[in-house]
Amino acid sequence: MAPYRAKILFTIEEHGAAYHGGAFKDLLTILAHLDRDRFLPGVLLTGDRSVGTAFEALGIEVLGCSLPPWRKGRSYPMIPAALLKLLRILVGIKPGLVHINGGYNDVPYVALAARLLRIPSIFTVRDINVLKEKSRKYHFRWASRLVLCSKIMEGEVVRQRLVSQDRVRTVYGGIDVETFQRTSHEAGARDVRQEYGIRPGAPLVGVVANLSPIKGYEELIAALALLAPKVEGLRCLCVGGYDPAYYGVLKGLVEQSGLDRCVIFAGYQHAVVPFYEAMDLLVLPSRSEAFGMVLLEAMAMGRPVIATIVGGIPEVVVDGVTGLLVPPHNPSRLADAMLRLLEDRSARLKMGMAGNARVRRDFTLKAQMGALESLYEESIDRCDTH
Image 1 (tube, rainbow, N blue to C red):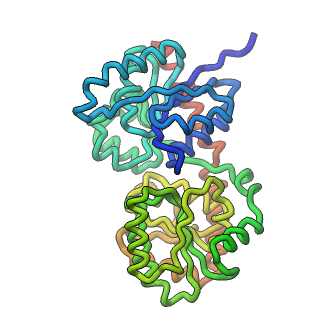
Image 2: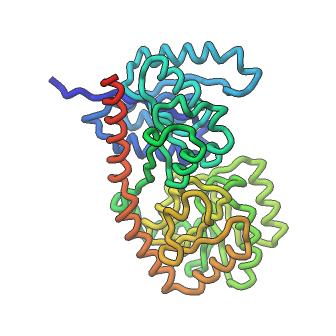
Image 3: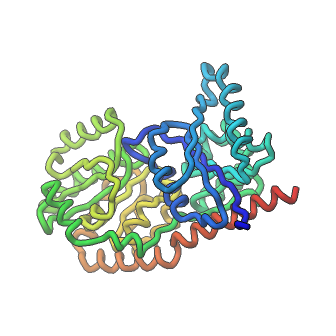
């Protein structure tokens, strides 16, 4: 007889395949490495269903259930029908656990439906601002457990008394460094530089983040305007999907600052390793950040990082060891930090090596998956005993 495998339904709210956020990428990683001898996964898409092909490629059943906005008055008449449809899906699947991945609009629907059917539910919170602004509106308490990306988020949950301490768990994101580096080769870096007209040896800083005000792109452009006159041939490669309207705003700032040749918008890229390889250093000037997986990716590639002192970033970056930390909203300090590392190749190499060692020690994919799978079993077992 085959061993029992607990069914887990993963839900995600994704709004198009033009670019993907951290929740989508993290869920793909989880599903690709989930122990299939112990767990049988399925995915429920509550937003754009075109992204389902990525999960189907992993051999996972994909379902869809549109959920109207929870807090919009015009949606109220549609909520009961959506909730009923969701209940029917859960009854049909009979999962032992539901894992809600980001998308706070999913929480009240999925957590309530799971509670009505006495199915444990986990909600992974990836946006620290959601805790402050929407936690009560979207009934985070209805989830059996909250999984948080950083200790600072855990502290915020406890401070606000959103749920009891025993229902909170911090699980850091992780990197499979060996697999990550196996896709690495010098030709990739040369190809990137050649494609975007960046000469070999030209100083290149990079950002890997969807174009959004929260990522601090406006401060970055202001910092580059201060830095460019001091660094001959400086280039900045911005890798990330974007909303056309905000992209237009940033393009306007670039032109006004005389940075047309300096700043390159590469758009969303499925394969980011060649871009990390092409960079001398990674910059993440976020105004808010729950954790910052791109920092781990860059560190795994041996690149020093410069990031802002917000959210969970100080839990990832050791200032002066694996990179430099600067205050948010401060283009001058950001420019100074970039200049310091661009002028000191020895420091870049030393910090890159230290970052790689830190990821291998503290942020492995094995540790992330071990923590999640233990939580899955614990949640299912707890439900079975009640």
